Length: 134
Image (spheres, rainbow, N blue to C red):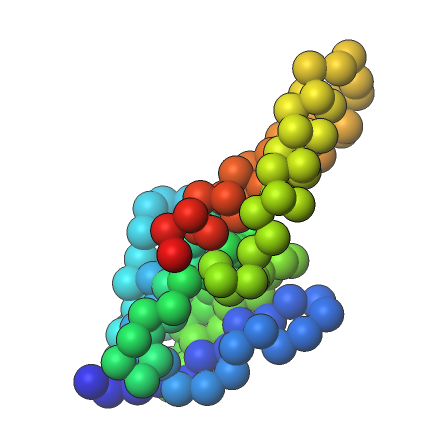
């Protein structure tokens, strides 16, 4: 299968950089699969499972919101605030984060605090879901 250059970046690190055969991400419009030769493209990613196929094998990661960009030369860049491989997720920590977010959602709080708790809950649920698919 043909390969393309893929970079997955967070503010703190380069999560993945190398050749990939396929990328599957969930955008605000639904799932997108990217192969070499994909048309130039930019979309927002929602908290979900990110799948990267390299060396003939898929590997899954939990990703928070971000963007995916396919350049004219088929190079793909994913920018996100957080991403982690499914086998590196601390499920107990994610469960605690989920419980905190649910408690915050039930509390009377400002719209900003509610929105933050909602994002934290989505991220925690996503991390748990991706970790359980191992």
